[in-house]
Length: 263
Image 1: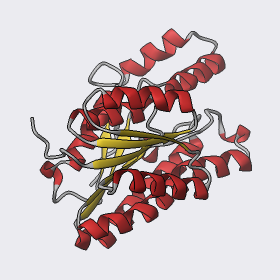
Image 2 (image 1 turned 90 degrees about the vertical axis):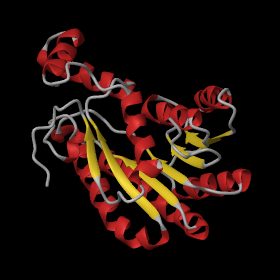
Image 3 (image 1 turned 180 degrees about the horizontal axis):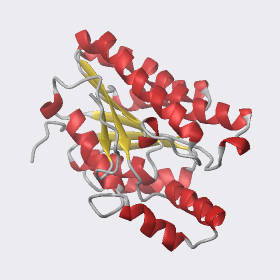
Image 4 (image 1 turned 45 degrees about the vertical axis):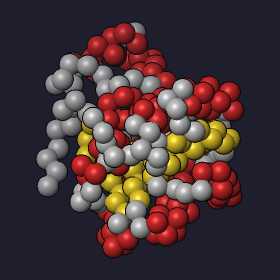
């Protein structure tokens, strides 16, 4: 299926592994060249090679988005290399799975800087490029903790709620320039970070990780964990002409596990 994305250029933060890697490769499969950033050069280079195998260009740029100057450097380098910026996928995250009592000010600041503030700063940097071309797509990867209480993911909940609100706030501001911005809340997704959460839950409960995994799957009506590719498919939809008039929205990709009713 032609999604009308051929020859576009996307920036993906945290694009070297997990959900970010799946998004980068999905975009590449549809003719999008990708600038990806992350903290590990080897991971970025390996993913860039896979992107290029789809016949598009890739620009792996080492950058810790927790630092504002690194975001500016990433966007400037990508714009110079590609000559344009059409799509931004804000995906980078770094958090600690721990209860409230163990979360220090440093943990809170780190999570806010690496995710919420990095999303805001990245959008601030790319919007002028998109306005110049009269077209742009921004997709923010949030998380289901924006809608639920999760004892080991308290910072995630606050940060992801902020991501959803920021998405709505910015959407109206940039809509006249034909720029859409939407948010995806992944459910329990099979990534290294989720395995860390399972490990902590298993330790606290005195059970095995296999038991925690089975317990989690049992709470998902679709009967399986979410895969990174599931999130990537939703990103493709928001970036494609199929969603030309959709903006300011937050949707869950969670296999039906979310029980809240969102109007």
